[in-house]
Structures are given as C-alpha cells and as structure tokens.
Length: 511
Image (cartoon, rainbow, N blue to C red; front, side):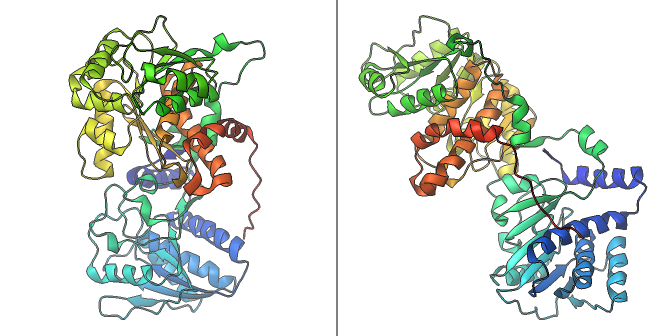
C-alpha cells in the first residue's frame, strides 16, 4: 500500500473532484459517511454520549458532516467548534449551515471559554486539525488537547491525531491528541510508523473514500507499507521436482568465545526459511556446540579457538551472512577487511560486521554492491551519524544507501527497508520480539532467502515481513515477555502457512 505525502493527498483530492465531476463538499460527504459507517457498525445505535471537537478547516468540516449523520440516526451528540482562526474553509461553512438547518447548534470555543466537561465513558471525535497543520498551536488550543487527553475517554481521531504534523515532530508533545483509534482516509500516513510520532495513536485503520484509482495507481511514492498483498507476489513456491541444490548454499560467519549462540540462531533461521544447505564458519570453540545443537548445518572453523582471525571458505556459496557475535578485535577486523576485498557472493552484514564498518568506514568501498545491512538503532547511528528526528534519520539512511549502493534494514517496531530513495515499511511483528537473538534470526532469514534466489531487496522485504509474522504467531502461545528468539525460528513454518491462508470476510453495516 502506497504512503502518500500531504501534498500528494491534496493532489489526489483535486484529481478525483475533476475526473469524477463532483464538488469538494461531495468528497467531504463521502468521508463523513465512511466515518459514520465505521462508528455505526460498532455502536449499533447504543446510547452513549459522543462529543465532537471540530476545527474550522476541512478536517473540522468532516467532523461537522459526521455530526449531522449521527444526529439523523438518533445518537446523543454534542458539537464543539474550536475557533482558532478567523479563516474558515468553504466546505466547513457549507456543512455548518447544513447542521444548523437541522436545529443543531454547535458551541464555539475560543481562548476565553471554559472547556466542556468530559466523562471517561464519553466517546470523543477529534476533528480539530488534519494533515495541513504547519504551525505551532495557540496555547489555549494546546490546553484543550491536554484536557481531552487527561479525560481517559475513548478518542477517535479523524485522519490523524490533531496537533501532529505530517513531516516533522511536534514542537510540544503535550499539544498532540493521544488517540485511541485513528481512521485515516484512503491511505495510512508515514507518521503512524515512526517511533517518535507513532506513539500518538494506539491503533489506526484506513477508510476508503473513493479517491480516484488512476491517481493512486500512477503516482510514485517514497514509502510503501508492506502487508500480505505486497508480499504474496514476491513469494517463490517450491517446485515438485527439486532438490536441496536448487535452494542454494548459505554460509554464516561469526561467533567468538561465549557468543556462538548468535551463529546457531542465524543458521537455524537460515535453514528454517528454506536454504538448501547451510555452513557455519566459527572459531574452534564453537565446533562442538554447533555440531550438537544443529545437526542439519555443516561447520567450518578458524584455526583460532576463541575468535575469527581469518576467513577461508573453500567454495563459493550462494550468499554469506556475517557479523553476529563476531567481536571487534584487531585480528577479526583484519580478517573481515581481507574477506571484503575477495568476496564474490551476495552479502548480509549484521552486528559486529556493522560495528567494524562504522569504526573503519574506509572498508565500505569494498562491500559488494547491493549488500544488505541490518542495523539496530545504535548500530545505525554509528553508521550514518546522529539525527535530529525520525525524518532526518530516514533522509540520512537514504543518503547512505545511495552513496554505498546498499540496502539498509532499519530494525524497529515497524522495520523499514531502505533502498536508494525508497522505503518499505513492515507491518508485522510485536513487542515480544524485542529480545536477545531476534536480530540474528532476521539475518539468517534474509540470508536464507537470498540463497534460494530471491534478490537482495526482495529477500530483505520478505524476510522482515516473515520474521514479524513468525513473532506474531509465536506470541499467541508465549505472550510478549516469554517469546524467545528460538520460538521465532520455530514459527517460521507457521508464518509461511499464514501467508497463504485466505483472508477472513468482513461484515460491515452501511447506511
């Protein structure tokens, strides 16, 4: 699913209005109807108090139009207009007149007003600001938002939480609605998926308001949300008449004294995701552990007992995964540098491989083009430098990807695969995956997918999705706190099955 910028969404509105020969308030009516259908299908006429806080722009117009529909269907509502400016949008005024025609008079709030009481059993509709917010809020409006936030009422935000800009962090975090649920028109917003801005909503959902598909399909976007529909075309099912040689030979390089488990996790994940053959290359201290714990893998060892001092693989594998538990001793750095100068196969670099690159950036020129780098936040910071906010982080990651012709996997709640100027945002996974070894599993999975013939970019996108799905399946049995990396591996097969499972039908009542 494409993720559009604010300017692209405005262009989509204009394109739809022109092509479909409708008026802008007709489009607003579509939005309000979609909002109403969502609410009505869940409340079914239940007598709860719904308080709508509406701005004076188009987001407020959506809220005013929604209020009319709610009243027409017998809901108990109160409408408050947040009068933060003398300017009003045309469609807001049209819908305000329609509301007044039905003898429903909203209460206008300004800097001199007391705020209305809010009960924790009320439902709040937040339609104060939309995607066009580009200025600091007046203090009285910010205090109204604080008043809503401390009410403990269920807050439903229209399109985005009010006070949250589309392309930057808010100047004052207390002046942003903390939404229980966001109903986003047509497409999700980038801010839903970033650590610093995603905290302002618990859940989000997309409502189709009929924006013209020609514009949506033909317009390029910087970011794409990756779900099942985007992953299925990447999936390469196995052929009946095939053998292990058809699915490649992956080599996992890493480990040091006390950190052999990282290699074991990566190798196990590599096998579980479908690699035909997997060989571990580790210090001698890891030989017995790996041969015992993972009989499906082959093992090669360095002459050194406790660390990697040279990398000598006597064949050319389909792909290498390197770095987990490897350490950053001088002899290991030297071995890694020599390896980079001579490597011929695709490469996935993780953990200490990334730390070595950060300490010795001159080695980046020897990293094969199209390699996949899988940093966690601290490793990313070491690679690309400090950033001001999540938006700056993404821009610096793109610059790094372009400069070094590589693929970055920015790990997090919504891991983002960066390739040149494009970002692919994952929508699987859960907090239980914030555990030791989870990153080693991901590296093994991406390596195993490349081994089978997936391109490095597709392997990164698919691997991140499947990794998150395995965690989602596993957490159903173990809960967040008890989910271990080994359980993620054990559920990779179930993640494949879930990928191919048909979607469940949805029953939604409409007006």
